[in-house]
Image 1 (tube, one colour):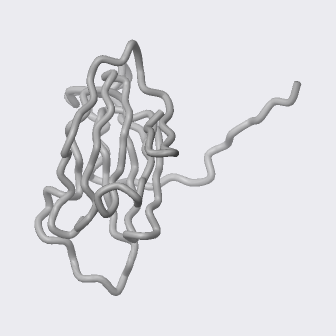
Image 2 (tube, rainbow, N blue to C red; image 1 turned 60 degrees about the horizontal axis):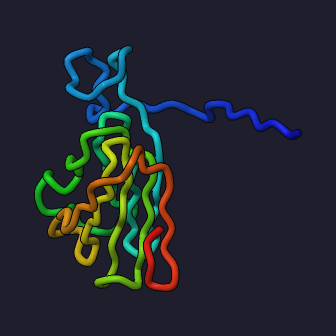
Length: 141
């Protein structure tokens, strides 16, 4: 059996990462870490899912103008650790699905990320943490 060892490649700090124990969904240590990353080249956006249920969003195109409003930089609908994210360009001019430890899948509208990234639908009732998502043949698995 082959084993894989993962080592940190680097570290960075952001004021959006809370390391204080007062964070409402931080782990026992009080630290918040990234748990999943999604790059959407069609929209030039990078999404980072955090262990406190937030999804951070950065525009990667340096020539673009700044997004309108700060609210579309942090997506805060989940109530548990973000475990998976996928982008589906075939649906509604582009949507992102996220799954989390809160047993919920959220659908985010990425048709115009500069004007905002609203959560347009929530799928509740999963038996446990949503660990992975896949889209194909018009079905979300």
